[in-house]
Amino acid sequence: MTIEDILTREEGQTFDCKSFAIDPKGLAVTFVAMANADGGELAVGISDRKREIEGVCSSEKHLNELLRVPYDYCNPTVKATFDLIDCTNRNGESDKVLLFHIQPSVDLHATQNDECYLRIGDKSRKLTFLERMQLMYDKGVQSFEDTPVSDATIDDLDLTAVKDYMNVLGYGKSAMEFLTENSDYVKDSDSGQRISAAAILLFGKNPQRFFPRARIRFIKYRGTEEKVGAEMNVVKDIIFEGTILNQINKMVELLELQIDEPTYLGQDGRFVTKREYPHFVLQELTVNSECHRDYAIRGTEIQVKMFDDRLVFESPGTLPGNVKPDNIRHTHFSRNPHIAQFLKAYKFVKEFGEGVDRMSREMEAVDMLPPTYHLDAFILKVTARACPPVNKTSKENDVPVNVPVNVPVNVPVNLSETQKRALEIIKSNPNVTHRELASLMTVTEKTARRTTKALREMDLVIRIGSDKNGHWEVKS
Image 1 (cartoon, rainbow, N blue to C red):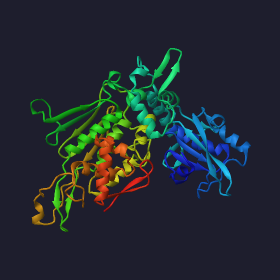
Image 2: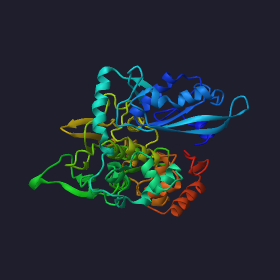
Image 3: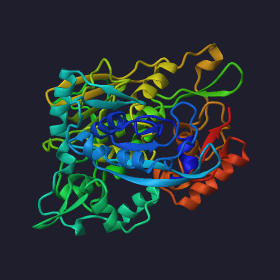
Image 4: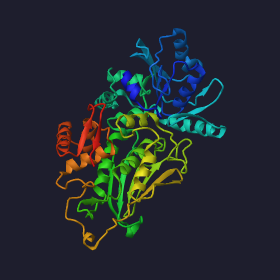
């Protein structure tokens, strides 16, 4: 990360800036809050409000005090590494900014004063006694992704998948160094290397060998009820296995093929498409079911049930941490922080804690009800109601137009299916890179680049910045 990256990055769930004038006790609050949540990066030597570069070279003594914070001011010690980033301070002098990399923890951390904090959005919130007890309980559940997998060896990991993730992160060392130095994917012990559950689920050659029900199943029903026996109304039943990333890509792709997208001619003479479910809703529900399921529950898989009027995602496990149905839009807790970090790197998660709120806002914008959450024994059921039928404004608009489906609003109808899919992905994730776009579309990167070039030539999208650090803008 460069000083430019630090200055332009917004503070949020996994990033914060602090003045070099902060005292060690004050800095410990952010360490504890991030370690108790999803981890993150903490830049010291940047003024909080004006984002001016102060640097950290003015006092070697104070710098050393801050470097001791995760050890001397946090209980237990917070795992963190640091870099010194070259910069020019506000006085025009060569200087450094201290950048901490804080690991998410399976332990419950507190400050010297025995106060417990949790990172929520861009704030480090002090927990009440009851909230602390709840977090302590969930921390015990959370540790499963770090549990060593019996009989698993390094040969069970696909190092190509590991290298792909390293490329996304910009990690320059070897695959083995990455696995042993990050997130405890691989740990050395007296009995040999121990492979974590997260490593198998994210990078395994065959994760289902160790976790047979760590898969996602799609069931489509005819009608609005789930019937059995002689009245069984299942019309499609598909199971996706492999890594978590593979399951998400395949499920979202399948859901896109199953939803209705009636297209009508609007009053202004332009085609209008009203999808049953926005693309981001399909993606967010799928990602959440994989990211937050309790993988310690091995007796069932994630099930996605499609009815004529709704989608139901059934995921093993309860709502994690302090998350409740009435605060889920603005409260975040990762049961599986390493898996969450992985999905964030692949841009399935833009910022921790904002996905459910954005999903609800997108649904409300097209007259849909936000998702509902219901706990049935140890299964969390999330229900999303389909978008109401298109409101037709005149008699002549009552007939569906004979045009291809999947046409976005106000977009020419002569787009290829590949171009339409690319445009939908760009609209839902403006930060997507060509490599990620190719993966989501299941095409080569060359095809993805050719597709976006065509969209630019049609004046539908523009690219701002580089492929790695830039973003897309969809023209209206």
